[in-house]
Each structure stands twice: as structure tokens, then as C-alpha cells.
Length: 235
Image 1 (cartoon, one colour):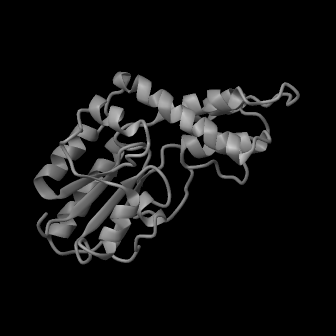
Image 2: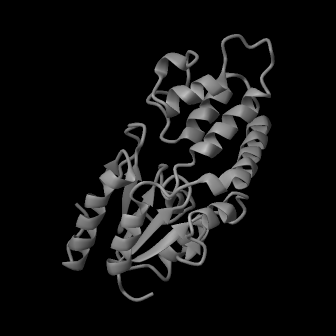
């Protein structure tokens, strides 16, 4: 890499929306519910969130308000409200990632991803953020035809890079969760710009850029690249 700006893109949640994984997560959790928990459908709550159908959500669907920033966080909150244990939730999450690995072949890239990658190829060094220990990572990379196309770093690796090899370079972290994974893993915040795909309008965090989806975020990313090339800071 040279001195160009660096833009990181989360594989899960940005390059693809992760809805298949979230749906599997809800199904596995629902299977662990006791019959004696009336009106507590995790699948219905998941649909309330992903499909914007609040009438399906069991009361209260998540605490505290506002709703969580990602589908996985929403379903986790539903499971906690239903009385499931941390171990049950972790087991269901792992099972959902295995399910996603098995069905990744049906995935398409998120809307706006080809345009984002074309933009970055001309003006920045893009990096995918992914966890190789997630069983869905390899199959999703293959399905989206990203394997071998971009460098891949884990969140802890990027956190270290932000204080090391990337220190002093303009960096933009694009994520669908807050805080962005490299920051959550201990990376520095100072000098780093952030872009959040806030699909569900949670209002979480203090991202420098925020949009409901990737296509709506593209003008902000292009503007950031333009300002960076001119030596200007974040908006």
C-alpha cells in the first residue's frame, strides 16, 4: 500500500446484508424457547425488525430503546427478553453462521457494492474486514466473488494497524454496526473517519457519515475521498 487513503468495508452487513444469518439466528433461538413463554415469538420479532412490521413484535421487543443497530443485536435482545441464557444465544448464533455458510451461494452483493469498489479502486486502498473463524466468511467471499480480490483483515489486526502501519494515513471505516469493528477491537478513534449504514434508523453512535443503505452512502464516501485528496479533514 502507498500513501493513499484507506477505506475498510465490513464483509458482513455492508458487502452483504446478513439477513439470511439473522433469520437463521432467530429460528435457532425460537427452537430453544420453552412452551411456557406465551406470546414470545423471536421469529415474529425478527420479522418486525427486518421487515418494518412493528405489530409483529412481542412487547417489549428490546430494551432499551431505540431499536438496536443490527438484526443480530435485535434478535439477541429478543432472546434475552424471552429469558434465554447467554450460552443458548451463543450456540444459536454459531449455528446460524453455519447455516449461512451452507446457503451463501444464493447471496448477491449488497446494492451499491460494485459502485463502491469501483470508486475505491481509483482513489483508495480498500480492505475487507472479516473474521476467518466465522464459518460463513469463506463461502460468502466466494459467493460475492471477492475471494482474492481485496486484502482481508480481522478487526483486531486492523485495530493494531491503525496504531501502526496505517498511522498518519487517512482512514475511513464503513460498517453496519456501532462502534465499527476495528474500534470495538481497541483501535484508535482519533484521526479515523467513520461511516455507518444505519439501516433501521437507530441513531446509534456518532458516525461522521450515516445512511440507510450503501447507495445512499456513496456520495458521502466520494466527498470524503475528494476532501482527502485536497488535504481537507472530515466533515
